[in-house]
Length: 596
Ligand code: F6R
Image 1 (cartoon, helix red, strand yellow):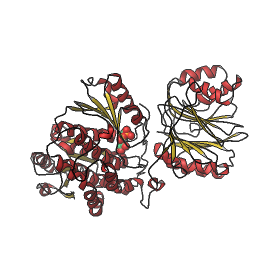
Image 2: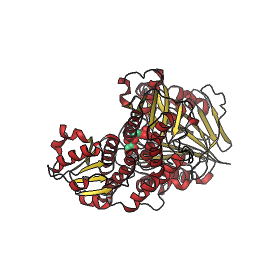
Image 3: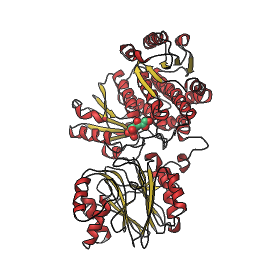
Image 4: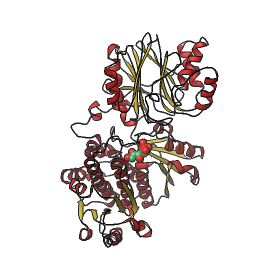
């Protein structure tokens, strides 16, 4: 949700580096984009629309300066216009600021600054920052002290980067919004996320809340609110720059769907003992949960629903809460563990629920894809899903990896009947997913139903979260109406929506009680003339009632959920593609939602 970048030390390449970095951050927001370079004066170019629109605007401009900052926006305060695009300037045009987050006291600050004679050009909360810096400079403070004084006035969440004319330094600070520095031999970067500068360096420093960074061609420095130097570790990222490219696929989402076999292998590597067939996640510390509350949003919430089922299967009381509703959840009991499932590790609703859980005395664990993320740093434990960077705004491979990681969590912390069988099924996941990717008829199913009025998804047990996820993916990338239901719920109301124009995707795996009951629900929709698409491993006779079949290899029901989801991802992808949708950047959405 908004991406910021900064670069110093690249001399006349600064602008290219910024625009390249913004293109890598565009998944965080694509309402507008802009850059500012500071030399003798501050030059700004900003434009509503995508990075391409900024590139076009830059063709007729010459921007000079050694230190640069840039921004790609997901609108919170004010519509996506040129005026509301970042960077924002003070009255003199000497101070430029980019910001990710929300300044909660901006109205109060804006009123105060307006009374003091400052004029505002945008509707944004961010614009107060350059004016606060301007005020401090007018009071005779040097640039760093002026930026520090401005930051100290802010309440809310921010990752902020500031440049001032005549100064080739970037000043930056964070609170509750991600900010990472990139360290090269003679150039320095900052960004909301590592892909922004990963093509140039693999050495990174994750800033913590309350830290302040200065970057200039001479080096970097991180200090605390009082200006005392902070000793920071320089970490090395372990993924290649190519992982953030499309590698020949039309869309990042399709590439990421195809990366699922590798993502699962990475998730399992070193955690499943090849000889004993046991799961070892002891590096996470002593988890031994007596009860678990999961908190998460969106796709991660669906993964959390699945994770809670796994624990309940193992006899551990487990509940799932939408992170944004956690305030109304009952307090965690005894030594309960509160688990935040969050791909980005930066989702404001999830972070806030985890903080609430800590206040209530619970231990916390993040299940996340992002090393160094706020969730990973703030929680007592972090279970990394290791999916690699996911650029498509709609989550795909990270959902599969979350399911795999939650299996590791339940297997590694509880005694489960049939654990060996589950571990075997997890190990088979990469090849089974590959078999689906090689042979899927999802594109022809998409072709058949691309013009349908709405899509419904049903599943039971472990397949219920998959039905919810199938519907979310369809909504997000096709902009068409889709709903997921527990199969048994359909007859309690939603069945009224079912017509010959509303295909129902039924996830039916195995041949047990769950499958039998779901087939009963399939017959109910069939009797109302709705087309049925069965996602099945062929163990039951659901095919008899289906108009189309999407096959998945036969496996344990827990692993079948991952496989069925791959077929549903592909259907949504191809429907969206046939409709010409903006698959990697669906309208109104952003990858990392850092506001509540
Ligand atoms: C859907 C999607 C979102 C995220 C949600 C939580 O495709 O990507 O629903 O799952 O915003 O994000 P994280 O997992 O980063 O907390």
